[in-house]
Length: 130
Image (cartoon, rainbow, N blue to C red; front, side, top):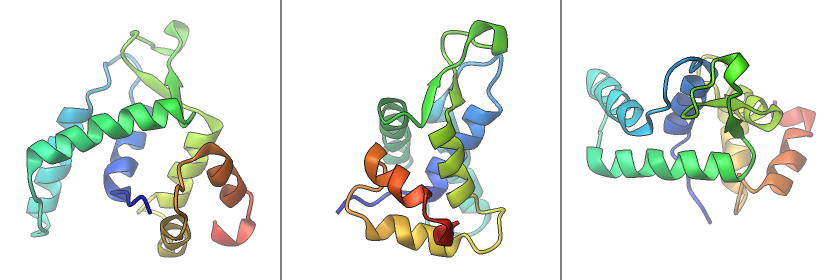
């Protein structure tokens, strides 16, 4: 079963959402995430591993259709992205700012491959997880 660092994925999706006009930098976002964890006195682990993980997530999110290249007329630089409908759905499910996000995270964690497009689309269509 695949396990995901949903908080890091959330951070990456928020950066995509707010990334018009600037290059997407997953390694930098992983460093910022590590600093946030330290500031909250939570275990960080190996920061280099977090950087690699963030880059792997970028590739996975792009491949699975959660993000796509941002068009130039929307602030695209050739090095940044925009959320797709699927990406927006994922962000709404895992967004820690939304009260009650623990249940959707558990539903995602219960799946063997929750970021597989067909699996995710089926899960996202179920109103009870949102």
